[in-house]
Image 1 (cartoon, rainbow, N blue to C red):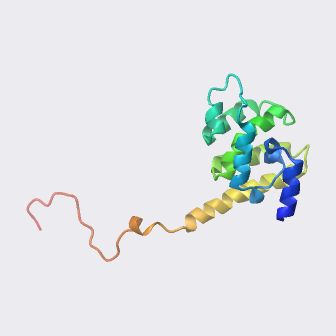
Image 2: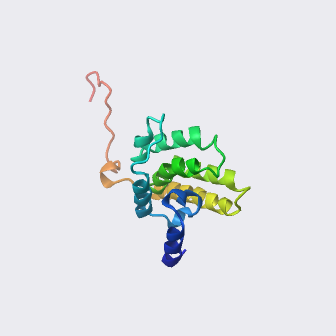
Image 3: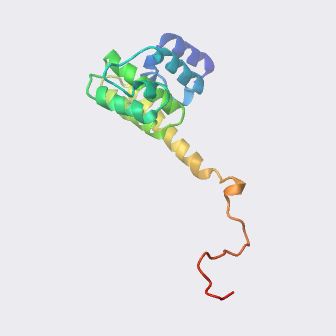
Length: 160
């Protein structure tokens, strides 16, 4: 998607609706910050972990979304509200958040055909992240030195 299309999408879409309107590959940390700014000052009563979720705790965000969004009809504004911290965590790289967004979008696919392709974009983002983490090499200080004898920690009992 071009930058112009992304700008048009952002102008037409509330930050709280980005989770159901923008594919994973076009969202950046700037979008995550925008979502977090939109959530500032909002509170969900009887959700003691809401502030943690808004400030980046992916597990808290997913827990709230499971409790509230899964039980709601997917068109309710509450769903956009509770999915927004999940989106911010997903953009920032949380695999569980990406998988949960994909799951929720697949639930929407019956009513919104575009939701299926959005769900696929989050699944692909998870796969790409997993591939990239497998391909990265450990830092030099973490690698085991080559051609060195391994010393035993076992007692030698007088043997050398």
